[in-house]
Amino acid sequence: MTEATIRRKPGMASVKDMPVLQDGPPPGGFAPVRYARRIPNSGPSAMAIFLTAFGAFSWGMYQVGKGNKIRRYLEAYFMCFYL
Image 1 (cartoon, one colour):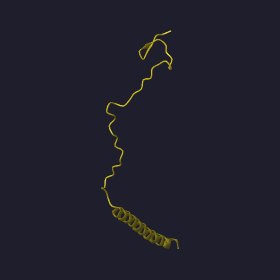
Image 2 (cartoon, rainbow, N blue to C red):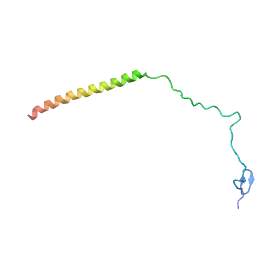
Image 3 (spheres, rainbow, N blue to C red):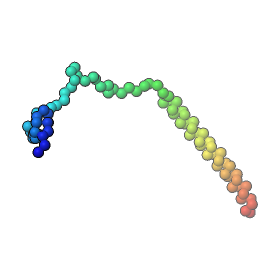
Image 4 (cartoon, one colour):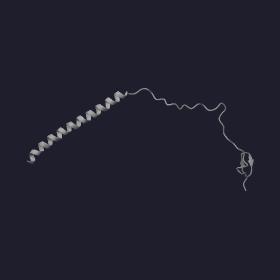
């Protein structure tokens, strides 16, 4: 059998025979943990976000309408050749 030093105790030892060794907090305790949410008050307002989204949507619909007019014109133009 091998000899091992477990917690300054020579030889084989059972877990039940071993002294309890437990860590504790440092003297004076741990430093406080900051857990509060810190959300900055900067950034665009709700109205600015709404107007930007509305403007982007309106511009997109304008482009769709413009594309539809061009498509209808080309369909009518090429329909003349089929008649």
